[in-house]
Amino acid sequence: MVVFLDTSFILAVRNKDDTNHARADVLMKLLLEGKHGRIVVLDHVFDETVTLALVRTRNKGIIADIGEFILSSPRIKLLFIGKDLFNVSWQNFLQYFDQGLSFTDSALLTIEKAMRGKAIVATFDRTLANLVRSLS
Image (tube, helix red, strand yellow):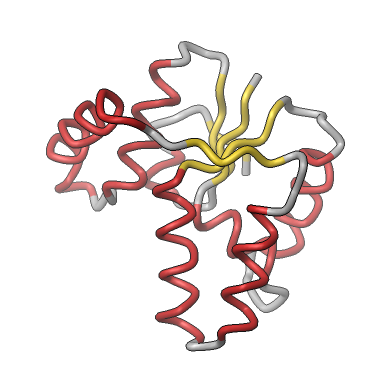
C-alpha cells in the first residue's frame, strides 16, 4: 500500500493551530511507523504546500520546516509525476474543475486511480476525499 500526502494533511501536521492538527499528528505517527505502507509526496503537492505556506505566513522558517519535513525524512519519498501522469491529470482537472478540484488534487486523483486499490490519500480536503480512497 502507498499513502500519498495531500497539502491539507501536511499543513495540519506541521501547524499546531490547524483545526486538524491533533488528528493529523496521530495519523502521521502511524504512517511513519509504516502502519499504512510507503509514504509519498508528489512534486506538485510539495510545490503547492510550500507556496501556500508562503502566502499564508510569509515566514521563511515555517516554509523551510515544511520543506525539510518532506525532503529530509527517510520515510517520505518525493515522486515526480512525469509527462503521462501530467497529461491524464490535466484531463481530470478539466473534468472536475467545476467541483473546485485543483490541478494538484487532480494529480493525486489520477495516481490513486492508476494504482487500482493499492493507494490511499491522506487529506482533509473534502472534495478530494470524496473522489479517492482517503485516510483522514
